[in-house]
Length: 307
Ligand SMILES: Nc1ncnc2c1ncn2[C@@H]1O[C@H](COP(=O)(O)OP(=O)(O)OP(=O)(O)O)[C@@H](O)[C@H]1O
Image (cartoon, rainbow, N blue to C red):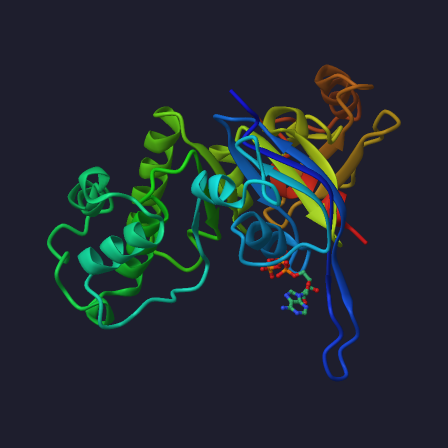
């Protein structure tokens, strides 16, 4: 099986417009995404995520570099590379006078899917729009429109599905429905690439993550490895309100939480939990309860994108 995506030396410079100077949105990105993964593309606002996705989708022309989708070089085999990927865009752009069914048929036509290979009814069922199949798109709720966009991205049965901020501003039911579908499609072999601002979501969904900042990939790792990058764990102690902070081994940082508990952050590579607890006890501070906290993706993200 080829890699799902291979990007080398990808650059994008948006030309100067009016008073706005030219903008280097991507500054030489190398990235490989293996087939079968759920890959998270994260980064702060303006990092270049949408630019990258739009280049993959064939909506934005790159300035330099090479992009292969499912083994097809975009410049050499534009048709095959386009057929390998489906994109669910961020914006709800759709023709208000088309019904979901008609939208899917039109989209299938655009991709050259023969009538006999269309799966319009299954797609409507998949995204829960069977009952609205013949309704005007303008009468659909925001959530239904998003579901239609997902179905549209799937008409040509792409190997790779790209979701750009799929859950921004959607309610919990729709979010769960989306993730259930995404997982199912992934289990059936589809590679998923998604961008999201919800780091908890990325942590739960993605097996691999790339973080981009200022047009460059700053890290690309398995979610597991990424989480173990920050050398910091925290013990949160209920000391019955005892103050002040006890003397602690070097490297441990105490902090009193607003709820009065004592939080001690320490590097597990150099200190063990019992060394911390021993020091607290030795100072005569009671330990009524203990909780341990692991760093989450948010911590890693903040550390890696700090300017
Ligand atoms: N059409 C355009 N013309 C000029 N500059 C652009 C254009 N599109 C994006 N940019 C600029 O390129 C940079 C990267 O934008 P991009 O939309 O790719 O970021 P992003 O990571 O997707 O951000 P967000 O999370 O806010 O969607 C930003 O500085 C943006 O202002």
